[in-house]
Image (tube, rainbow, N blue to C red):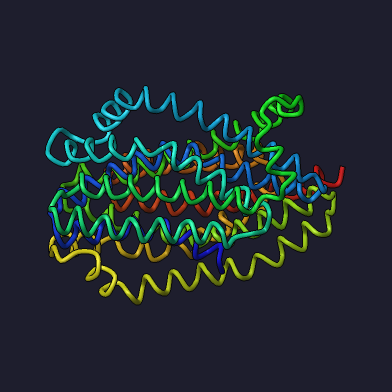
Length: 428
């Protein structure tokens, strides 16, 4: 439960952004934040391999009894995060406008989205630090610390949103500055808690950046994280497309997509929370070379994951009016969201298996198989379905969401087919 709660705290803050704008701003602001959040989340999600990679590497190191090696993985991830942050902070001023130019037509929504995205981009270093720390603790089977960090960050975001959006009337820019502030607060807290929880010998290791062992292991890190980054880039590109397509059907559909994507984030973070626990269990068993332990972790995590998917889908289906009433009082946005509600209600039910198997494959260190499954799902199914559907009936928001649902189904089937290969690699 702590893993699920800590994960859900992240998208709940995004829902607060949407709710604040839904009651204190316009449909343009809601759509702009949805579009900007999709762009910035895509860029940030591509870097989220740091959390998953750190969890897998730390879990396997601790499973083999190497506590010092676990800290070395944190150091390597930190060095990589510093380099990526510097590159992003230099390039984002050209990259973000170019992406928004491709995704949305010129107008107030795109201008507001640009402002929102550039402000949010300044907090990438904080996000990466928080991801690395969370990865370490989840790999150490400690999900309570990430829960504390995520909860403090979410509360800070809520308070700042109410001040900047509700009080100061800053609209999309206020929501961006609120998230920026909360992410830096979360990063500072994460670093403090990591230092306090490390053993004395591990603190000595963390302070030592000249040890020869730190210069080794980069090849394995590059292979694991490279495949994971490619897989995440494909998935987040699809999500960005789903979010941005609404801009071609009017501000109401764009705003409705923003709401639906926030609800998708809640579901995916909740499912991912339990997948994190499965990842840690599998990583420890794989690190010890315990194939029966891996199978036991996979089986034990399957039923709860399926139950979470069912509960989320039922909650969305039965709670539609309550959810929409909490998020916006703009009637045109509510009507647009209701038109596409069946897709978001079905999403947790048809996608829980993908998140479950993601955790299993990450824990076993098999990011290459994950990348192959994602390529097969996107290139082999999602894109052809869109192209054929658009040629037959015309491109529509409903077609895009249907293709996205099918993508999630195929993704879990592809990973399931690859599981025997994962087992053979652990047993070797």
